[in-house]
Length: 333
Ligand code: SAM
Ligand code: SF4
Image (tube, rainbow, N blue to C red; front, side, top):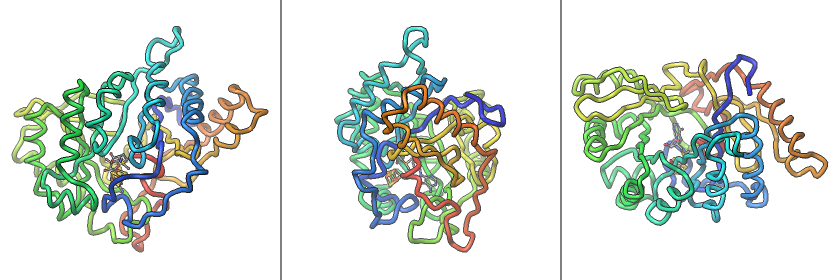
């Protein structure tokens, strides 16, 4: 599946719900309005759509949200998609099934995720300070997320910690997080805040360029070049002292679009060909149209991919408005 710029589209991110049990300050307003449940695709519909993408050449699927693990019955979707991991000739096609989660549900779900075929997960954790964690997530408790992280490790899942770089909030903590990740065998990825969705506040205050963060980290740690690629947007280096990788996702300071291999599907069946653009394709209509068969569904996907734009044009702080109206929790991080 090639887009107009000859990029091979092999990676699908699926937001299985826009709901969440936390309210991270950079992601959501505290009084978020969620989509009416009737607008959501059923898990069977999501499964069929993902299957069509796999048939078209997608070999990596990440389930995200919102908080993917709070969607009722989501394990069945993991199990069905996990069944497609393996060689294409044998009905497989997927190389990897993974998930981005805030970790709260992992104590009860980590083993099942492993059994379903998940091998790597991303857990969002912006700080190791309990008070700061409560402030950033508004409703979260650090211990609950840490229990989730260690349940994942115990289940055999490789854990990558994702932290959003927040100016004046967690910027003094990266050394501690690098050391902690090293101690427990986790990779770490730092993410720049992106202007997605209204969060009832000014994002100019939160924005911290990772070029600056990296410069400070490099004063304390030895960063070695790494050729590690995950198919995602992070650029990796190895921290010599810990032997673990550190990744930087810099949508604001570095244009990462030229190698983009991703598209994003929302829980209502809308396909966004770019995280940072408004253009989207409605796949729910063909999915629910009894006259459209699997081949017709694949055609609808292909004509959406043919509209994938060259890149995004985020601007932080422009008139205090988000440059893209929808939240990360809708499009899927
Ligand atoms: N609830 C799950 C979690 O927190 O990992 C999955 C969804 S969350 C939207 C996915 C990722 O997006 C998280 O790592 C989160 O920190 C990040 N994120 C949310 N809003 C963001 C924003 N405005 N800019 C940059 N990253 C953001
Ligand atoms: Fe929920 Fe994840 Fe957004 Fe935090 S970042 S509010 S955990 S969806």
